[in-house]
Length: 220
Image (cartoon, rainbow, N blue to C red; front, side, top):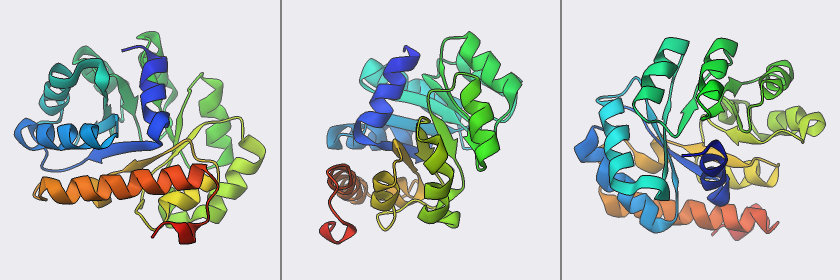
């Protein structure tokens, strides 16, 4: 998948669904299918999860270019090479490591490095990163995000860490291009698909309302 398409599928709905923990192929594939049907098109598996590479590859085989399927928690350049060889549509890191970014960009794949300060954000953007993960922004709050983004509104940020139905709309209204949703959306691998589908629809409605400029009170 081209880097631009992976970016577009992520920011189209403003949501990236993450799966961390017990999400082998037999667990994750029905979740991806459920979320795709709801309208979410971007999926982050995480390298420190059970059978993460196998799950990512299974999702890619099953859904092709209908979904952007990538790998997160990629902490080293060697790990980036591993997941690129496995077919990742994008690579996500919780931190900014220039050598990892260079490896992914050399492969023509979307790299989403992690930052938390303005300096890191500027340095990451200077490498050509189209989308930058600001993490763990949920714990710091929307006011911190607004303060960072104010002079850096030319950067596309994906807000990650502590995201839920209670704050996603606030971050989107504050200028986030997307929000990464893991535990609140996909759970621990044991949730019924009906619960995940219900939460997905709620998040999609919240993002749509936020992009239309409606206040938080309109969520309910």
